[in-house]
Amino acid sequence: MKLPVSLLCAAAAAALSFSAHAQSAKPDLAKGAALFGQVCVACHAADGNSTTPANPSLAQQHPEYLVKQLSEFKSGKRDNAIMKGFAGSLSDDDMRNIAYWLNEQKAKTGFAQDKDLVRLGERIYRGGIADRQIAACAGCHSPNGAGIPSQYPRLSGQHAEYTATQLKAFRDGTRNNNAQMTGVAAKLNDREIQAVSDYIAGLPEGKPPPKPGI
Ligand code: HEC
Ligand code: HEC
Image (cartoon, rainbow, N blue to C red):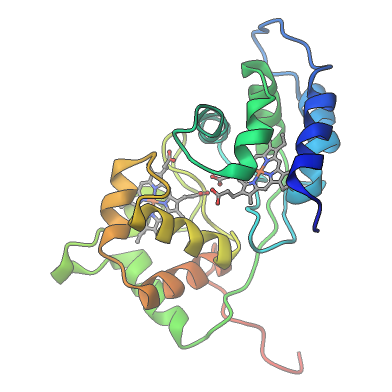
């Protein structure tokens, strides 16, 4: 969807100014759902399974990881012009409420697109590239891509376009909020990034594209 960012930011600020400020022990999932439905839904879809490949799916992601990203968008440590505006209007409680609600939304599974390239992607994901000291993604993100709470995010089923953008951003320093990932991405070439991103889109089973006619 194409809406001017400035307009969306104004809408976000208006909607978010209603949110409560009191620090609660438990995240308030109903408030999280309501805020998400007012603002975030425009780009991340009603259930957090984004239908736009440039926008990440957020459903079922670890809440601690989501809160970290939202705080870092707000502070500018993770530098993104679009998300800075939206995260900037959220309080700490808003972030927790949204993050814990998102964690309860079921992630949809996806498919890899390119059945030849996906094999290279699988090799990198599961085994890394030993002779270039590239660590296996599975070691930190788990073999099925579910991640390891709370530090290592879930990757499975994510849009390949978004994953590739992030890997390139880690590599060129545009996304500079994690030294481990900067180190991993620094050694990957474009073809390897495309391959591993495609494989991740088809996780947990690493599903190849559906056969034509089925
Ligand atoms: C105008 C579209 C748009 C809106 C509205 C929007 N986002 Fe985003 N969001 C994006 C894009 C694009 C990215 C990818 C940013 C990047 O490349 O670093 C993103 C990234 C994120 C991430 C990082 C995900 C990850 O896996 O690291 C989180 C968390 C997030 N958004 C949450 C939200 C929340 C919560 C709201 C509502 C308060 C929201 N977004 C509103 C477009 C949007
Ligand atoms: C040593 C552990 C480690 C290894 C190995 C590793 N990662 Fe990560 N990865 C992380 C951590 C930690 C984060 C969270 C960064 C943050 O907090 O912003 C992350 C984040 C990511 C993200 C961003 C997710 C999002 O939603 O924006 C992607 C994509 C990613 N890793 C892909 C990979 C791929 C592909 C490989 C293998 C080539 C890999 N990682 C290997 C630790 C690792």
